[in-house]
Image 1 (cartoon, rainbow, N blue to C red):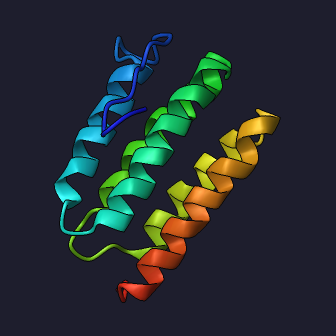
Image 2 (image 1 turned 30 degrees about the vertical axis):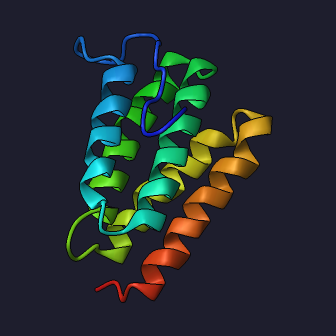
Length: 124
C-alpha cells in the first residue's frame, strides 16, 4: 500500500460484490477524515492489512470481514463515533485476523491503536 492506494484483487463475496470493492470503498471513506491524519493513517494501514488477510481467508470468513470493515470505518470516521458500535466491528476484525497467524498481531495492534486514539478524541 502506498499513499492511500491499496492493490486489491480477491474472490467474490456475497451478491456479486467483491471483497476488493468493499475494501476500496472503506479506503475511500478513510480519505474523508483528512482533518485527523493519525486516524487516517491507521485506517489506511488497516485496509491494507485487511487486503492481505482476505487473500488468505475462506470465502465465509471474507464475508464477515466484508461486513465488519465498512461498519468499523464508517463508525470511527463519523463526527461522533459510538464506542459500542466500533468496538463490536473492530473485535470482529481482530477475530477474523486470528485465522492467519502472521497477520493477527499487526491487525490487533492497529485496531487497538484506533480504539486508544478515539478515546483521546472524546468519543460519545
